[in-house]
Length: 410
Ligand SMILES: [Zn+2]
Image (cartoon, rainbow, N blue to C red):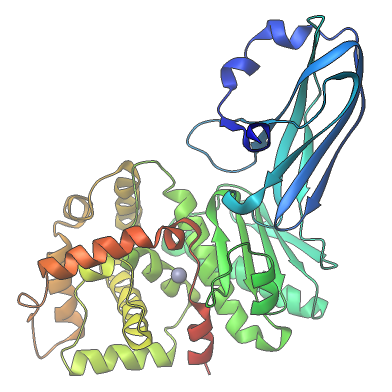
């Protein structure tokens, strides 16, 4: 039991110990395999023999993704000690969140009772969603990396149109904001939201697209008949992915209005439905304060739409008035762990409330600044902080509420 779940992180010291790697006489590996049962588990199996009883078999693995430190994990295999053994270790993905297309390097360490030790050479496990017959298309992602799009329903021109949208989105991002992908990107186009949910262990009713930033992988449901919607949704997720890679650090995080605002801005022109929400809130003096928009948006559709629209408008305001360099400086400070107020003040000379006031003067030409009374309600702030904690999954995976956005686009 303990062996099954034994999974100890970080055994780097072991890898660096050459005495354990050198020995090996007497132990022979007969077979080593991995079978993937996407998305729930991967089963690693090993057959080996030795002149003495084999007493210890462990699997080591390293997930190919951005990390703050090199991490090697360990699994204790199930087997019965004998001179010839069949061992297996099951990786239950319930806590792993491995996306389709993830790659994992793995190797075995085997010990026998005579003191021999052998370590196999690393092999790669491809955590592919083999339930579908994927086709693929590869293109260049600025400034010179590559982007591969996988799809299984729809024509080649459907895939090419999505590829073009991605490449244009990345080029806009580099030009407008100055960020670009840190590693090759893989995009999995599922033919529907239902198919996408089948690829997730804990599917949310509303999730329509997921960006796995550290892996450089996006999984999204786009039916071939919804190309226009799909282009925007994909560029939106791609922008999240690139911005999060550019600000990847153990210290920093982005206020939600900035994260969503950059993604909305990079989609292109603001959708008329969102613009109408923004205009109505301006005319009725119902804008949400920028400080509130730092935390997860409202679960209510109307407020959520307004939150996205305001986020777009705030990013547009900053880029139009202060330019690309300042935006890059802001992202750099947030990456280093500056608070939102500190970072804004250092780069622009105003904090969150200052941004709120200045931005309102540009969108509300007649009513100038009536925001003081509305913002900083302590109970509200506390509730939002609690909500932020509860929605860790949202932050970790950037699950997007595309379901309602899809219906809004029509
Ligand atoms: Zn988003």
